[in-house]
Amino acid sequence: MTLSLPLLLLLGAWAIPGGFGDRAPLTATAPQLDDEEKYSAHMPAHLRCDACRAVVYQMWHYLAKAEAKLHTPDSGGQRQELSESVYTDVLDQSCTQTWQGYGIREVNQVKRLTGPGLSKGPEPTISVMITGGPWPTRLSTTCLHYLGEFGEDQIYEVYQQSRGALETLLCGGPGGACSEEATVTRTEL
Image (cartoon, rainbow, N blue to C red; front, side):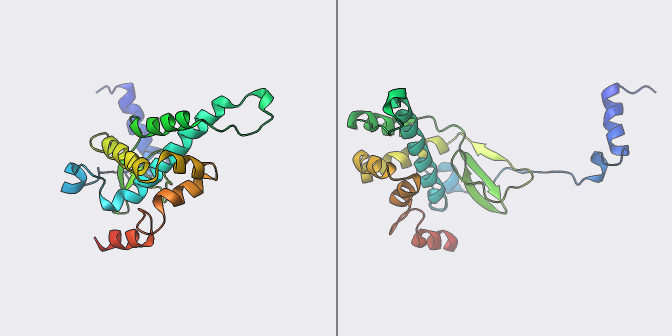
């Protein structure tokens, strides 16, 4: 009986100390989404804080990139302010982007939105992230909601203070997506 080289290498890995044979197998399953998570047009309540933080990150990122384009060698390191028409366009672009890289995954039986700008928290050895589907539309809608609620002028003014201040404006405060009241509601669900 002759065995092909890849099969011999695979079998050899099981026999070599420190190979794959002495490790527990890694398994991962996709998060089991409920009907609201699958079909609702709106961001589910238990994911709104994560969504808000993703929106803050994207707004901050887009505004910082736009300001960096204004920086010239002769500006002396001074931070350049964007004109109203520019920051209005930039904030609109931050909301109408594709939102690629965002999705949902389950860590320790808790579903979390994941993507750029979101804290990773405890990292599992292996996990499955569901992207696409309703998540880009929900994130865009959430972002546009904040633009309508607070306005571009206030968002840009607070952005100039710090990213933390922007997160406090959009996500904190009474009734904010990350407020204590919202957290209590999420844990009661």
